[in-house]
Image (cartoon, rainbow, N blue to C red; front, top):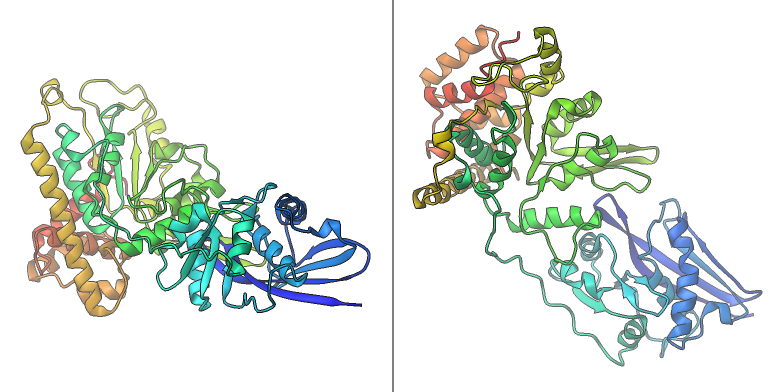
Length: 520
């Protein structure tokens, strides 16, 4: 009785990270049976039929045509395996175990293989190619065979030969060295012309809101906008993207990993622009924070290094809003499972918008509010104190008069927008320089811990006096004290000031207290 064995390397996606999986194939004489073991899900169990059909259609002897027992083990066996990316490695492992790869010197010990097979033998794209490429590089693999549609994405990882595979026959010819496929050139994240549907230059009036957005963009601070319906809160949130600095190479990799794992990358090899996500009020916790049967990133992770816009924030579920408190502090979304926890990156700028009351016209200059005071208070208290404490900038967006609305966008407005963006970029560079001197990998002031705040932010004597006065007047909690200092530091960075002065602290405190929110 003869027995043949092969071992092929593949990968499993866990959250947005990938881990190496060994695809072991054992073929020996016996009654025909094709078994996949190692905690395979339904899609993976069905790969037997796809592999049989694909091999048959490229004129290669499939498992179903032989009276042999085929066992495929996916190791480690205690890790749940999901998805269809194992089709290609299982097919290659079967061909090697049965001696159908020409020559016995085919070495797959340093080659990672992933790809879904069509019944015709074509190789279809998969999710998480960039994460799998990073895993292969970490495992010191020589090359990675991926679907051609994913090759540009995987080629963002330098030092790894990425081989684009269009069909199973092509993969066999490459592994047999009959028709070697040249590796994909490294995908460079080049600067591309940025296009914005709405910019700060398109916003009429609202100078205080524009100033608030500039501070938020420079330091990564969260913003709450309150005002009557139709005053431009949504437009202001969309315009914030136009003054954020271009994403760095590392940020592009982080964003691409998330979107690839979620299957939202599309035809582009990477995410080059900062995301703007605006989930509906009826979204479930799993849709917002991530999770599901096969955990996938949620909206707060899809907004990583970009903007999460919650329009009409009081209409979101209370438990969902309260669950935002932890990601706003840590920049991570934790999905708990019986087998362990999964973490997704979630470092975003929260932009929230709300009306001051259910009818929307409380304290409006033009229309009279029809809501009883008790109803107004219940509506505003849908945002808890601990959540508001994590929002550094809280502003009123008032109604504009007709003269302001009729003003046309001028060349001066466009130059002001470009100047604002350059100012934000310079402030970010100051922060990066400051953080690099301490050996930390932070990006913005809002990410600083209390220890870093104490070591990096040193107000002058007049600023210290104002801070003590605010704290002694019970107007600052310990958390809001540190957040106030971080906002003041951002304002100082916008002015290229090395020291935080009284006017910086005063402006930062002014943005923490809304005019209509004098609740104790």
